[in-house]
Image: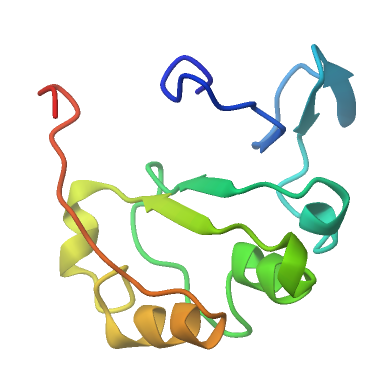
Length: 127
């Protein structure tokens, strides 16, 4: 991911099971293997840009209490919240009732103080 965003510092990443230990510092980057990370993570590692990749989702997850990222941002102090949050979704997500273009998703992000904007990008074509 750091090769994609030149000039930005990669602070942490969270992913599913991996051969890495549960959490450790690698070249100044924190890797958290448990997807149920602490909601206090952004208070400990504040970032200006939060990139959330939803590329492996086959269907939307029901927002019972909000997705883990939303809970984490809600638990973060206002001065430590990311200025920009980018969520990358699979192309078919535009058809999901509870996907990124759905009213429920937009309202939840607006309640956190963010404006939702969508743009379809072809990753194989330069922009």
